Length: 251
Image (cartoon, rainbow, N blue to C red):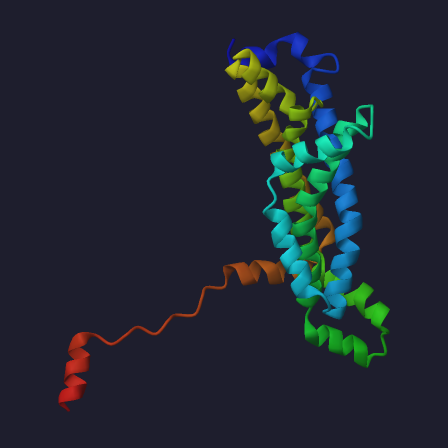
């Protein structure tokens, strides 16, 4: 069976183990993990970006979380929680925990970096107009932070979607089932189909975030971002040619 046959077989499109059911479970794990990560990272990022306190600690923590081995951490958490929970929660909770730890660093970094990168002239003008600190944060700094904040959320979402396949290692569903089961059965077409579905899902979410960014980000910020990307780097001074050096030394 080739990849085309896998996608055209009606049996692969029905039931809880079919393609729609696997995509639904994959999105459920990813969505829950993303919501929990947002609830943790955004308030913490706003606090760090607004006050400037704990930036070094948060940056170090974010780098440490990025370095965690996902699969090894998943197995460790399952071994810890399996004696506590006798149901499928012993496998669902570790998966959510691992995905949340993976998603927190980019959201956290994007949030506090975006707030710190807010235009100081705009902040100063708002302060001169009598805005309170809360009004400056809500009306000036957070809107200016939206490009970096959405970039962090987009990166976290793509990492979650691509990594949620590890749920299949502990017996859960999702698109990772096609990869794990295909490997166990020696069905490489099934494995390739699972990888293609994960990549297509990530591509759809990427396009969705691009559309959301165009809707919620101020057109002025979008133009500024485009100009900063297109502005060429200033020319670097070139060292004088050897002939010029000899001529100047002779004079």
